[in-house]
Length: 407
Image (cartoon, rainbow, N blue to C red; front, side):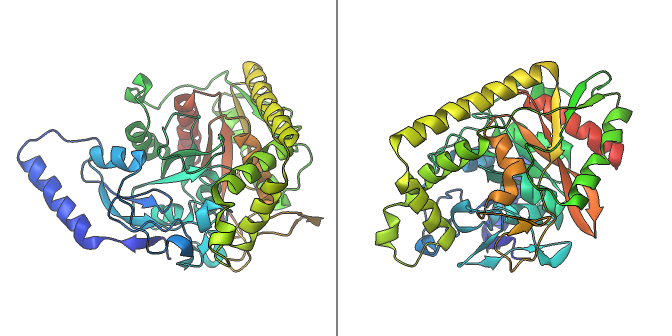
């Protein structure tokens, strides 16, 4: 499946033996004691190859761990290796020139999504019980939806990020798992402490107000995705929720996301174009070029739109408790196809246009979770639930209630 691309069996067995010994001696045990995991290959791991999916770093061995890796290790998890990601996590198709493509476990001719595709496939195939990922424009949610697992994009700063690999304030790190319970458990270990993590996920949703998506400003969505998503409305109603068609104003989301993303890419990688000729993929070169062309006014305008979108969502979620919409605008597509070029006859201009249903939410800085809703044409599909900023626990509670009602 090409999910775990750097495997460390001997090291993992040594860690397992040490974990057994600690338990036998009655030593204090962390919450993840003995659980195997693997880190996305964007996380720096001390003494372990970290490629970022790039030929530039194909032999890079860091001398330090990222904060997330430190936290997970301190919690007692056993590291099996690194999971595959597209080059520098750019794009929602997990392919790079170092390791190749990661395949969808439900149809190996299809993509698993991305950029946390290796993590999603490792979970779906029972290689791991828990995994981590990153999310700028959908990289935790999209592969979860494509691989029939659960992926959470947390509220900003819920999981502190160090070192900061992206200049964009929209990037976050978060958990993936096969169930909402497992996800919440792992999230409690990687996130800053919250007393609600000690509470149960079960709760009543009678009378809770849910806003049901309409058309997200007219973006194209495959009909089968639209139909399957809308078929879940009855599940929320059966939970006692009050469901109404309504959605926040996403005006300016395209401009805000693209401008801030392109600027971030050009800041991080602009100098590499000359230093490493021919070693950056075309889509990244295009992003860098777009970022270099930006003027100061463009950045100010994008920042104003970005702030406005956050305010719009906060205001919208005063009247509603949650917002529900599709995760992705398409089903998993051919693994040899870099990205969709059209949806329902509507041409797409860029390689990220098919992810607007995810990156629109990123601009609001709201937590969002992808939960499986079944299969269409034997391919997995997920639903996206968005909560109030800071209420990640309430979002997990609704995800669990939905999951329980549909399994």
